Image (tube, rainbow, N blue to C red; front, side, top):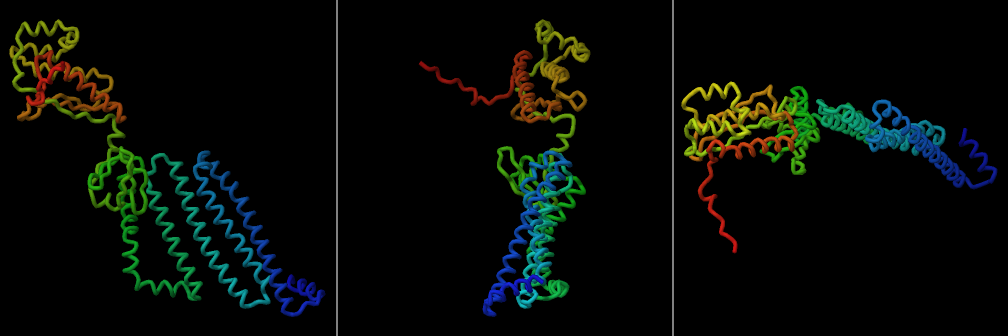
Length: 404
């Protein structure tokens, strides 16, 4: 109908036949271009605020955090409407041009396949990003799953595009891929291994984003920031990024500190070497002098210390162990519901190790180190009170020359 109207207008001007066909074809192209452009901008303009409102109802943060993914999805979907409209208008505008109409139908179909695949990939990215912000500690490897879905989408629509271009059935093309199975397995080896590893990691809850892991083989010691299909990214404590193959978390050993982070305390396990030559029995008058010290008065009132002093052969190292244990029991930052002990280890050529084994109630790294340092500062300072000394090599105690 539109071509007939244009033909009548052109004949009224009495143009030659070739000019008439060129004029009608040009008008059809201009009309199609205007309609396609209008559909694109309308679709993009309406879709963006609709997606924003949907995400805002889920979580207010998503509107900002997913702005990039939302824009990509809106753009991909907006490209679909003009192609659909052009496919519907093609019989009306180009029905008299059979060759052009058939070529245009194939181009539009390829265009649709391309942007449908890109729209699906953009939707997967948007869902993955939204899940990452909605779930604080995700236990599902959404990054790996989203990458796998994108890969499958890419393969599917690549087959459809190739089959449409060649004019063959997708089933025929798929049957021919059997001979390429070995090549495909080689090309996608890491993706297949990573997918299997991602499933095992998720089922066994081995690693989550935010976990502190140690993997010396790969130089990783820090927090997991991303679990993807083929790689796991770890931000080390020096802010470097280590990339580990996902399947390595299944095939190799690693240490996950999540149990410590979820428990009631972080372990303190450190020893100080006492010079064996300073260990001796305490005399009666020395005990009386110790009891007079203000720092030790409450210590000697403890029932277990009173029982210890009932013996005639009390050693200064035993008093030290009881004192340190009593100090730890009264420390406000030590978890009293977990293991707490002060023990002797096997004597060595560098002295007798006295080990402190307890758990800090504060698991923050900075606070934990401060608590541990404070305990050992006091331990070193109290040694002379019990006439004990930490082992130290003679070479390190050389006197510095006096300055003039």
